[in-house]
Image (tube, rainbow over all chains, first blue to last red; front, side):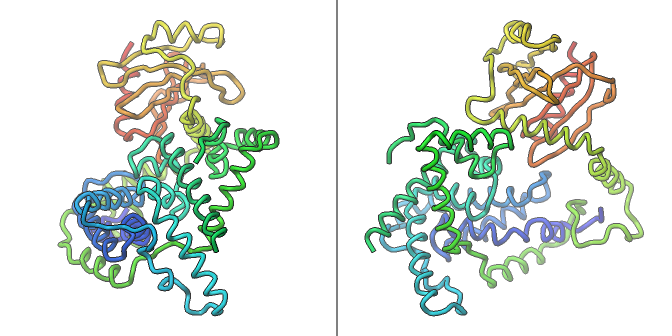
Length: 176
Length: 255
């Protein structure tokens, strides 16, 4: 293997997982600005620790750092951060593809808003596992490693998250 | 929210998530034909997944953040040289691959060209370990006493597996399990290191083909196998590679 400078190695191994890092941070923090801060903080940590990284799964390693940075940030801000179940922090309108047919796009926007809100309302311990499984499509094993929880706990939290989400979506549908 | 009545619900979910091997997945499919609760749970899981999929929720990093971080990484002074993951660099036509990198490369190739039979074996051993991690599957006989574990296998196996305990070296024996590998019953000894279980699978060796341990990595698990005292031994775990190598070293050198 070619000898690389540390920053080239980091660029090749870690930076390709920036989207994964941001997606996780965004769903944990429920705000774009906070997510950027968390990813920034995580990258600084990752750069610092990278020379001692010997694993084979840089994505999992990075997500673990992001997750820890997000939890540290939430702990720090506890009490000052107000999160309302009724007002999703992610603006669904901002997510829509501009090319969509207006009617389809409206429906999509409503669905997206509903699902986003339901996920946002989950406890963070349930939300992180749901996001890692459904959006990041990671195995139980990887989720267990990233979140530092036993596989059994991953399975039961995932189950609870999905049950709550199913119930919330059903209720929202009935109400509309 | 009500608690599930059927204890198979979490396994149904594991099946839905593609976490089970074919045999167990088939069992769960069969189970759903008779269990309304698991059938409904499976349908609900699909509904939730579909709702999340169609809502297109993945949030990619904003371009500004990407640019900022890339610049930040590149601004780092190139310090120590790190031979690492294969990257865009073309290692094969570089004039000077130093000796250490060459050796590392040889090791990588050795793993890649490992015979398909061996690869299949690594898969099987890791699958067995993952299956054992499912609730209730890990341990048949719970004991930290090798004098309890060893006799437990008698009458269940046609050979006597060597049972050792390494409590003093931070690898305590926590129990045993009867397993099947290649159609024959084998012994699985379960050790613990920190919070991580280590499985050691043991059966009589056909040939003394691996006197020196062979290490492989597979989906975040490490396996090490070797033959010793007429037995084939496979250690498998998600502990750090070096720790599993320590474990094997202790096992091999303890009479």
